[in-house]
Image (cartoon, rainbow, N blue to C red; front, side, top):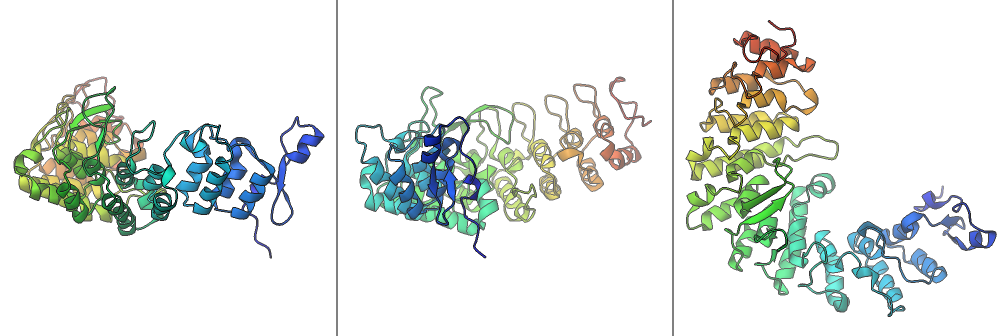
Amino acid sequence: MMAASRYHNFRRDPPEGLEDNQREDFFIVDEDGERLYEAEFGGLFLTMVKHNDVAMIKRYLTKYTWPIWPGVVVTDNAFWNAVHYGSSDALHMLLEHEGAYPSQPPSYKAQMTMLNEACFSARIDMVLYLLDSQAAFASIQERDGDCRMNALLSAACSLTDMADMYNHEPRSEFVTRREKLMALLLDRGACARDVLLRPHLGEQPEDTVLTLAISRASAKMVKRLLSEGADMHTKTMHFGFPNFEEEFITDATALHFGSQYCNIDGIRVLIEQSDNAADMVACRDSFGRLPLHYAAAGRCPILASGRVIEDETQLYIRPTMDLLLDVCPATINVQDKKGDTALHHAVKRHRQCGGGHVNTIVETLCGRGADASICNDNGETPLHLLSFHVLDGDPIETSLVDLLLAHGGNLNAVDADGNTPLHWAARNLRHLETTRHLLSRGADSAAGDDESSTGGWG
């Protein structure tokens, strides 16, 4: 039985409103003789490019001889698709076709730089093809028009792509491939000191090669970047942190980001090579957050299915927090400008993503002296946040409640809105057992604001 054509989605009637002669011109023939009709935004052609289908691309460009459309967004761009999917034969054909229209603006430069996209996609073969065979279209130092990234910054940025790592290839292969690419670029003259500047937004760089690479780079790569001039103390500005609520953050260092990704091997190198490790661990961003806060609120390893990879808590998150606290134990209960401690951040962040790893993180912090009685500026203790920040109302393990109580948690602490932990627990029917447990441990249903609902418990 013949396999279905990869273009079967394009076997449909042409768009309405075409004259008969236009209908005859609006298709090309598939390998099996069936008619294929182009879709909006060039979907048929882009599919050919994605699959590096030289025969079909030739057939398409022979019939449609006009310049290649640059697309509305970058993913509509045929050159982007060729580079992103590693279709070097298709790219060669596209460049040849583009050369037939020298008076036209080059569509491969409309929204991106091909070498930088190849680096961001970690397509080593494509990078080598561009550098060695298409040097006119590839410069290691060239910056993108919008992002202002160059090749090495793009390769370092690819290490931060969690979706690729957790859904498409093992962590070791993911990191090794990207580090091989970074080493190739450094060997060919890329600069480890490169930064991403946006002067219209602020004086600090948005990123450096090191702040990007430290997300998952090995100790060997971090050492190389430092030996070639990367500055571990450079302070950067950032937008839209998923871990925190603020849209704009400044004064964040490589150690903050290494801690956020819990790259234990990378941050150990930073600490070992620092002139004053304790000062570096105590360095605050513009909201007063320490690297320990970033580690406690670190990014969860989550698959496309939504499942958290629990083993990584033991492998990366716990050792990262232990290392930071070994260097500066006094940071355990330091509050940021909103009054949150590492324990607040851990509960807020990790109860939202579900899974049992929050227990391990809280146990680690409590074991190092975390005080669960501390209130943030909203009067919230970690026990308040445990009941409030929960994925889809998932039940709370009573052992976690007991752990916080054993380390200073106050059952009847009242936040700025008059709520106790019991109020928050009683608002969700899935917290029935938690509510019972809080009451059994001495929670006062009459504490707090009289208008705050306790769900009928009393």
